[in-house]
Length: 448
Image (cartoon, rainbow, N blue to C red; front, side, top):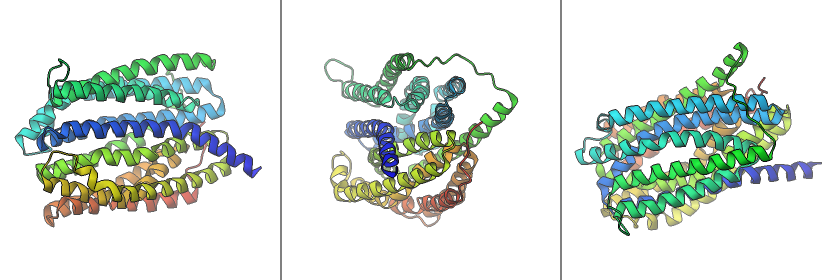
């Protein structure tokens, strides 16, 4: 019996986690290539795209929150065999995600210079960031629609489809970056504008491909998602009880991350460029284990929807152990190879040195980050108790991370690697609280 359970767990984990992990790794790998391309344009361009992308990340984090709600609801409804509930969760969150995209597109198109002036005092960096942001926002709506479809596909055991769309998207984005940044094969040399345009085209292409696969797979499984967003009073309260905390949580966390970006930007162009250089590698390492977080939300959510509470608790512990072991191995690998990575960039030696020091810090805190990703981003949320995760993130970011970062940078005037390490201590606080909640099992419940 135990062997059958272990076999079923492994198969489910591979079926969900492997495609997500491969997609994240591929995207992060090509982000490294993109960053290297931009890196040939100098520190100002690197810092500009880093800051422009940081504000755009506010949108992607909020969109991710809506997608997470879709995943929580969809996983439990699929586990309970409730197709009507699945349809409602998909269409309702699709409309909300699209509306959020429209708001961000409007703000970024109208006020890009004002937004970027908050991040940096360097005029050239600010102008580059505003130019990038004004074009990049056109990818927001395609991103919203494809994200909701991808979540549903993963919940119906079709995680390979978003992977295929992601492979196509990142390949197209990389090729277009090469052509449009440097002006190859008759294309104009557009620099950072070319990078933004490439992203928009790639996201639009990914949406088209995801939509085609989405319709085909639903027909193959005999699932018909009739449009219906009507909710009864109890359903509305339950939905808002899941959505509101996770939106607040992700928005405030993202706002905190942007405060960190302001801190890095105010430390100077060199430190800001160094931090931006480390972004793809950080994304690569977290992406390598992101499949465990996605799998946790779906697998544990299905078990809770089926009221298999003991199995849900046991499988959660297994997922956490896998994440810890994987993150330790990747941290060691980063410590061994990080110095060679930063030498690829065409920047000053002191910027390369700072980037490597930041990578060392990240290697030290990465195992804690991964545990928080699996626990908060997957397991605890799977029962719909998103308010717990909201308070964990608010406490970690705003009571510890932001105050410590401001003190380290502007009162103690420490170099950026030390600033990054000190503000990253918030991850330890989050993990301690999350583990206490996990062991008490108060997050385990079935959605009605």
